[in-house]
Length: 552
Image 1: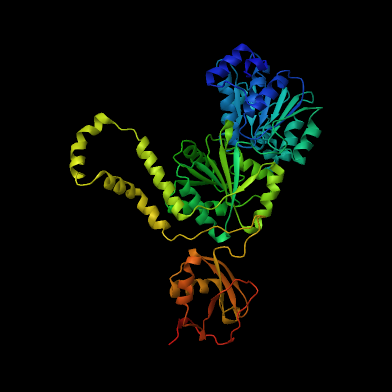
Image 2: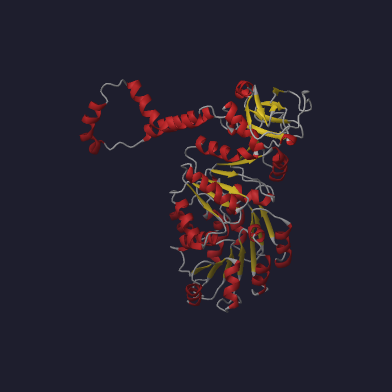
């Protein structure tokens, strides 16, 4: 088994790494460190996020930087403040018992004057986000003329965030004879262009196949109607009571809306999006890191560079437009060799995109059913029992209270006590999920949707010519049949008639409830149908009353 000392690192640095708790190098570290230690070749390293790239370039860099020279010898560019601070923290930990280096972080959202003071005191290594570094260069507060090593970390993310021009300007102010190391999770043409323009015959190493996913991530997808996605999300959260996860949305409006809805529904959630200032963002991230927030709802841009350990799940409310975004989203879980799950909630229209991502990542996706209400209740009950089994009992402090407790519960048998205790927490889930509809959109084996999304399909002899719309039909089903919109699936309003889908268990209630009902002076007729094209014949009427009512 490889050790860090076998890779060519000095005894002093190896000892410093071992003190931190690092024992065995990851594949990217094992491949990259011996090459980078030579310090004489440009380098491209392709590996997924969370595979230990910081140590892969950080340890060789610490060996190469001269701690007696106070000039700036190394520049590390990172896409976000969070990743930059993480890199600084790692480098300081690695070098604490090895070399006395001044490592300075430069990033937006903090005092630029304080950062300038730190650089002027002598910054041998600068870790910067492109935007703030451009600002510092404009003020002539940073001199890159002495830089020997430039590291571009998460290069694809920096380009996705629009930093191409900033990177070009920064690199133009560094010496031509410098050594450049580029690390990226994927290798789109834009990253390849940087390598062509600024690197000379680089050594290229890939851990896994190019653009493939982290093998420790289990990729899943669930097919659900668009209007059921939020309810499906809550099912997932309830079915995974110990979840510590990230939820991705396409827009900041969706992010804020879903986070606020989750909070209102009693979930421990918060949001991260572009409307937050840096202080608000830092507060949210601090709460997420210490797990006082267990569910973080974020946009792609806001979540860039998040490096939080032990994220168990990544949930995609929408699939991103770019495959690289999916790679970075899912890469927030399964970091440092741990396992993780990435779940996409997709409509039937998006199943084709799942196949495209599968092909690109070379990782299979498993279609999973959205848990039923019964399954959620069972999972929650077992989680509660596990907590009871694992709870730490403070015998000394609780002892004096037990006689009164025993007296209060003396008339209950062991089985009755267990049932009542479990019901304290269990009843609220049981009440919520009683008669909960099936949210799954059933699909054939090839991934295409089956005829009916939510069970049974109904014909109704009303349509646009009767001024029927979806909201009116839902109101009719609720008022006349006692069937809530949660049990109703796709609604297709035609000219003189319409179709709607509903939970099969509600079929009798719908047929009975609408019998004898009039809508705008027209007798309502509803039938079950097994054929989308079959339109039961019925007399049409152009009469338009104001409301539906019982036929007298």
